[in-house]
Structure formats: C-alpha cells, structure tokens
Amino acid sequence: MRPLIIPFFIPHAGCPHTCLFCDQHLISGEQAALPSAELIAATVEEWLARSPGRPAEVAFYGGSFTLLPQSRQQQMLQAVLPFLATGRVHGVRVSTRPDALDTATLDFLAAHQVRTIEIGVQSLNDEVLQRTGRGHSGQQALEAIQRVAGRDFAVGAQLLPGLPGDTKAKALDSLQGVLAAGAHFIRIYPAVVLAGTGLARLYQQGSYCPPDLEQGTQLCAALLREAARAGCPVIRIGLQADDGLVSGQTILAGCWHPALGHLVKDELFFELVLRLSEQLPTADPVLVHCHPQRVSEVRGHGNRNLQRWRQAGIAVSGVQPDPLLDQHHVRLEALTFCFSGSWLTTY
Ligand code: SF4
Image (tube, rainbow, N blue to C red; front, side):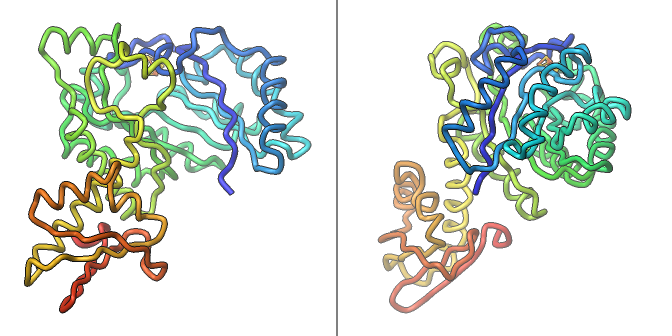
C-alpha cells in the first residue's frame, strides 16, 4: 500500500536565497505563514481519519526546512512526535538545500525522528548552478547526498533539467552523479518559467527559452530510463497541478502538463515500438502486448501513441494486456512474426 503523505508547505520560509526559477509561494499555492503546532496536529488527525489503516508520513515541503531557526523546526517536528510514538505516523520527511545539511543538522533531524531528506540538487553542473543563482556548487550537492546517505536516512534528489546553460548531456550527468552519490529516489521537475521570477525576466528579454512540452517530455524520458536502469525509483515528474499552477497565468513557458508523468512514460513506449517496428518484414497490422498495468501508457495519453504510430506508418491494431510481460516490455505480434523488447535495453 502506498504511504499516505500528509504535506505541509513552508513556502520560501527559511530561505535567504532567490534562485532564478523559484517562487515557492506560487509553487505551493500557499501564502500562509509557517504552520503552528496546533494546526499540524489537527491536520494530521484529519488526514488519518480520512484514510484509516494506511501507513502515513508527514512531509515538510517547500522552502529550505533546515534554514529555519532551529526553534521553529523543533516546534513543527515536535508536533508530530506523539503520532510517531503511537505508530499512527511512520515517518517524517523534509526538503532542503544541499548546503544546509551539515553534520550537526543531521544529528538534530535524526534526534527528531526525521527519516527522509529530499535535497534540491537541481543540477550538478557548476555553470548551470551559477547562472541560476543557486549559491552552491555541484560538489557541495554530491557531498550532501553522500553525507545523508551515509546516515540512517533515506535521501531523495530533486533534479530540474532545462535551466539556463543546461543540456541533455549535462542533465544526464547530473542524474548519474546523484545516483552514484547514493540517492535512494529521484524527483524530476523540468524547468518552467513562473511569472515574477528571475527566469521570467530572462524569458521576457529573450535570453532564455526553456524546453517546451515535447522537448521536456523527451528529456524526462531519457532521465527516467537511466534512473530505471540503475534501479532507482522516480517518484514524481513535474509540478503538482494545484490551483496556483492551473490558473493559466502562473506558467509563462516550459514543460508542464497535469499528466506529465504519464506523457513521459508514454514516450518510452512510443520510442520502443518505433524501434522494434524497424524490424517488421511486412506492413501488416500489429498487435502490441504489454503488462496489464501499462496498457494506458502504451496507448498513450488520449491514445496519442496510437495516433503517432499511425502517422509514422505503423499499423497498430490494438494493445492487449499480458500478465507474463514485465513492466518495461512490449511484444509486437502479427500473423507471421513476433518481436519483443524493453525500453530498458532495446535502445
Ligand atoms: S533555495 Fe529553494 S526555496 Fe530558496 S529560492 Fe532556491 S529554490 Fe527557492
């Protein structure tokens, strides 16, 4: 059963930086002050009551948790302790910057039963980090992941491909770097230009253009494939579709779609069938078989893969579930031939 994540957003709180791409108020959809201990306790009770029996975690997202005054961190973490003590909540996770995770900070978090730390790495490339005003180096991010992974924490790395100065090769290098440093899971947020940010100024001046939906989807697909090859889960692709992001005024440009994760997985199957079809001896219609849980991704969001294959001259007559296939495989069948392959290994 997937854990219930009870999120508290701490927009921009604790953060003295102004990264070019960031407006945590817009991203979280909240303008409120930090949650009080009372609010945290009441909210956790409410969420637990709505999902009885489901394993739950409390998450403090947004901002840079460990840059808050320690008394405020303590206040929020202590509000969760009674739930941890009774086993009603199984863990606490926080997100923060790579340069806000020294040994004393990790000691403090461990003492307050934080189990998961998500690090906003964004990129490991120093030029990209410098151009986006991150204020730390790639090496610092690597060392932070190693330091956290070397303790009894789960560590996640957030990557933000497509920032100024970034390329597909640099984004893949960043992914390989965080995997080698010991990240246990990844989040991928392709660059979007939010109104009111430094990135928006560059975009409006014409000196920066983020990957569009198609480019970003392909970039995320390449990253997802590499992470999967390394056995590292990608737990999120793209920003959440909350009110602040679907108003139509917040995002000026970039790779955003409410079902971006679906589009990215579609892309892997689209490309796989395209590659396998190069071996087809005839133009006969083919039936594509896949794991039952992957049928929707193989067909594509709104059947877009079926349409794209047709446009590419591949006559796919349908998509059939086959529980014997693994989650990455497809098998193409027609009257006289059969090919199979996996997006992990075929291309
Ligand atoms: S460090 Fe994080 S919260 Fe602070 S400005 Fe940068 S992205 Fe936003």
